Image (tube, rainbow over all chains, first blue to last red):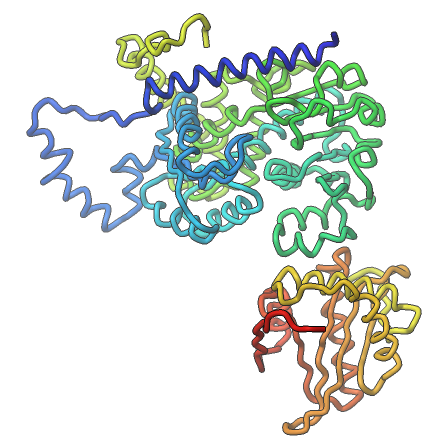
Length: 457
Length: 163
């Protein structure tokens, strides 16, 4: 028996265990986050400070200067996780109620890794305009928005319009988070192979939210767009394709890329695109047989392969290496080089919240990606990006992000890199101490109490 | 401006290239409204019409743009006798298409200016343009060049009609 069926069998078995335990835990804990007071309440008289009558004066002051809402309420550290549930994980359009457990999980990561108070808000809306209206109406309550699991191309429209119209940072993690960690991985992969950013020929297999955003981020990072080729289900993206006008109307973000990439005007499918390329970033099909070894053999020396589909990469790392790949990254934690959004969004939001930022853009993302890459002091084939256990990375990246927004005039408060580093470190560490004490005191119950035993998660 | 562009009146040999652009243009219209669903025999019928239009130099103006022998753009204008109004001559742009690769290069504007010159030579005092109501891109393009809305065409589907 070869290795692939064994891996598939093991993976299927592990997935079944995770599924069962998730259901058991969901029934036991009935939600993953909760609101806990952060002010002292010793007697009921204290409510005269925290609530009426005293609090009216705080309201009056904020009414005169709404920017005080960032200083006198928890807005500065609050993020809404907004979704309509139209593209949840790999399970599709499941609706807002079914999106909630996933959004709660995201809120948990926000808090655990970045010390951010994130509120999951799945909403029931008919169209993208209604989604925009809801988001705009919620703006006064939050310091930032994280859009999550929204179908394409609606997600492009919402991100662009909300970023343009709102005075808080708006992030779509499926686009921007993925793009940022891909760029971070590329920085180190290029460093290891000695390839130059402006010279590399790069293929993006799949033209969904992640790769469209990645292409735009690569442009901001200085890659030569003419050397980039995108491939979707209809083949290589190029201006002569029959569906160009349809894209112009329905997906102008992808249309723009068709105009600015592929200067050789390649046509055909993945094999034609990959021939002579240095890098392939695939975010397309969860099928380990999708990417062929023969395609990798068509590439330049020291091929770099990012096979990012989940749960199964487009090619197993061992197969890619066998075909000559020098560096392979996947979306999974059980192989080296996991390209994982969780390395990005907690730190980016920690940074933009500390800077009270009015927005976030590709320049800020390039800074975040570079900082993540540079966190690895001695990158090698099996370590091009950090992992979630690299705690020190989060305040480092957060402070770089905050300083960049300050430099770009996007922040409400100004500060040095060191000041922002100190703030981010303090918030993240205090949050971690608070949580640790909750666990140690038994306020957060152990998984074994839920009947989940026999495995250390 | 687009590179090495040649703009000239259409000839019969250009018909295959023009047909490709018309097919793309009509498919684009289909994106805006299902009332513009492209018919299966569009190309065959359009080829016949094009032969007539290209040779009727008084009734029509058909300009095509080429870049390195590759067809890049098309503008087709009906010359209309305005019986009730003044000025009496109107040129109506019925088809205007730039191949995606040549967009954002100023070619559309250049072709429009060539149309202005040709209309002036024919003493035509009014240039108009028709396009699907929901085509915001076309609306913005013409508005930017000084056009304004003159007339609306409303449509209502009449159900199945025997051929």
